[in-house]
Image 1 (cartoon, rainbow over the protein chains, first blue to last red):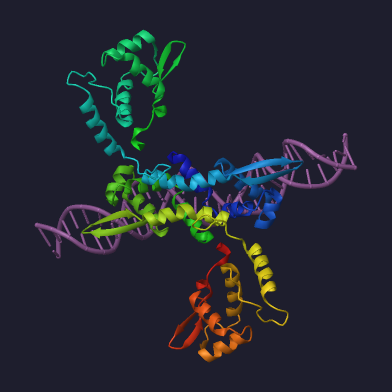
Image 2 (image 1 turned 30 degrees about the vertical axis):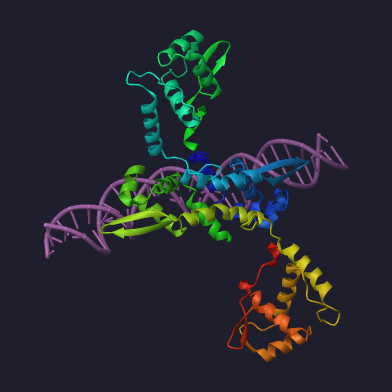
Length: 199
Length: 199
DNA sequence: CATCTAATTAGATGTTTGTTAAATTAGATA
DNA sequence: TATCTAATTTAACAAACATCTAATTAGATG
């Protein structure tokens, strides 16, 4: 999750009235008026807070006749609670520590150095997933972003680095570095590339 | 954790600059100036945010010559992240749902009704831990708070309810409802009593 | 003591936020 | 259509907040 979202989540819970709303909703859905009464506050105030909670994805609502019933989105509350910690400590869902940028750069450099010859050609395709991803990422990053490539172009591009263009081309697709649509290849946006730092 | 604390925690994390400070500190301690520079912000601003993070218990500091080094209080970040969820869903550390007060009262009443006779005497000592705790709690709550009792006094008190005063007296101590110091017995403060609602 | 450095305080400013009363809207019901 | 109900929007206002500049403090060092 990105910084903005985490901030929004914490802003949503940074007010006693809103937390009290969530506590009330933990027992089941409630109408706006009901909430206003239990909280000792105007319906307008409930609307105001409801908007913030909804924007942060913490609440759902359901309409029945004139009345709107609010209810919790439990999963989002759970995820948000963990998001800050994950952001700060770079932890993955499982709890392992993710490499920070500095460490990741060191690892990347060492792998590239090992798998590429002095003339820039790929010595072999790594068997270990992490190393393979580093190599593929490096190759794909040399393709132009947003440009469409024909199959022949791709093959030639890869052959600059390694004979087995078929395998590498297939890996590009499988690992989601690229996508293909009727014989046309294109780089995926960087944020779709797999994250080997987590492995 | 109480509402105020949870709100304070979320307020502390409800600002991008502060989260970025925590992210920077996750790699190790840093001076105020260092932080100001990395964040692109005045030292005064860092002081301002540092105060909020410190008040929420998320940061520690250490002085070395003229420089103050800030560092994370990881445990507090971890606990805070879970506090909201626990408050809202009344969950315990382990994740089981805790009974709310209303439900707890119903359970208590039904157990007491079953184990006490019409004349107020205890029919039998419950074998099941939860029920036993409810009964002991009820008995102890009849003792005066802060008053010191001799062993004889305690025995007599218990005998008003049940013949086996030795067992019950021992349970009072084992379950931490009371403490004993050279033959003198005294009620523990209520917040030390075991919480059967969690069981 | 004078000077240097890092941090804090004070004051100012513009922004965001929580709340309300009053006006308005959306939908149901008669 | 007129009326009722629940929710939302609007406008207003005080409080809280993030940030800056400038002044001040606390310690270290010459």
